[in-house]
Picture 1 (cartoon, rainbow, N blue to C red):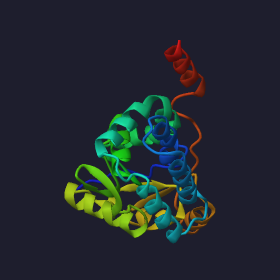
Picture 2: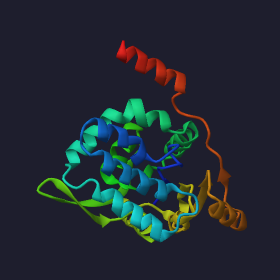
Picture 3: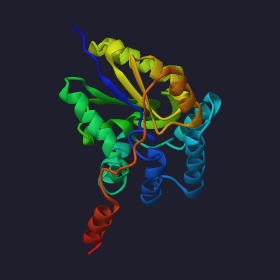
Length: 238
């Protein structure tokens, strides 16, 4: 018989902030994007993560963010994420989220990251954290380079549809599954499973969760303490 799974949103659910913004400095330092493109990406991602952002805002922010990728290769993106994992991304991971993920896996439930962030970002993050897979936004690739055109923007109803497709492919029972997210734009995603959970919710999601009796969790603890990160960076520089 099919069993359940756990699905975690990425930004402000599994990690403390926008993953794209966290990586923007690495892009700039490696000369992959210019200062103007970096600023534009920052504005887009800030709009995406703003509390109370509507679906139109999320769509516009996602499309603007993908436009910045035009000309880059998926291989370069994966390498950048891998290089940034220890110094930049791992310190942003919530310890509570990984502990919940471990508990799900101990019960035999696979754990997936599902995010509007680019597939080539969320997939390496899931791999590095020992999770079972990831579903993210897909950008068109022509001649091994991003065109900047979205093939699947993984938010709202599209995000829920992606989870249903994954469940059908992997034999997952969504009625026995759990989903975690921080924002009300993820309501279709949360409603796709039998056990929706609000994590660090925005005002609207908190209201909906209270009305429907959904659990509300507050993640606060970093997986890697700041002092340990600072010490590692000092040793590297030394």
